[in-house]
Image (tube, rainbow, N blue to C red; front, side, top):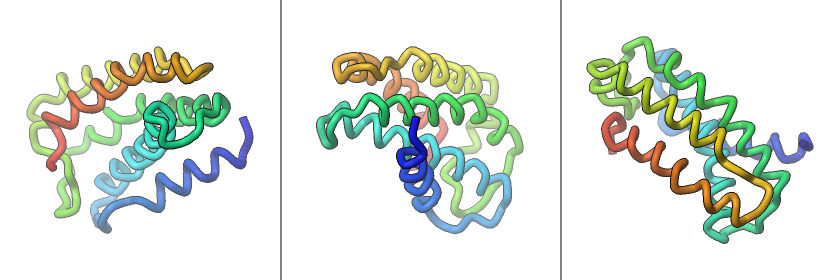
Length: 141
């Protein structure tokens, strides 16, 4: 894996942090989710044909998601609020379900194959489904 591919992923994920949250817990959540989302944009862009498939870039994006996914429950554990947060109170009301959904995301990322475009596309349903299932219940629009 080359550093030149990691830097654009990190830059994309950190530069895109939405509004300026002031609560440090909310800031940490936003940074982690942006990190995951930046890598997801790379994977999704390739799967949708919006960018050329590159197995090395896909593997690096998967590695970034695999590093971020297990950290999700921990950054959401403190119930912190901020006007810029998109996290719904339902997270803490149903924290066991939330963490179960985070584990489903980890499993989907682990199962994602990045060696070919067909493999990548085959894993997108589980990955997108895991993201969407959590966002539907726990993220404000």
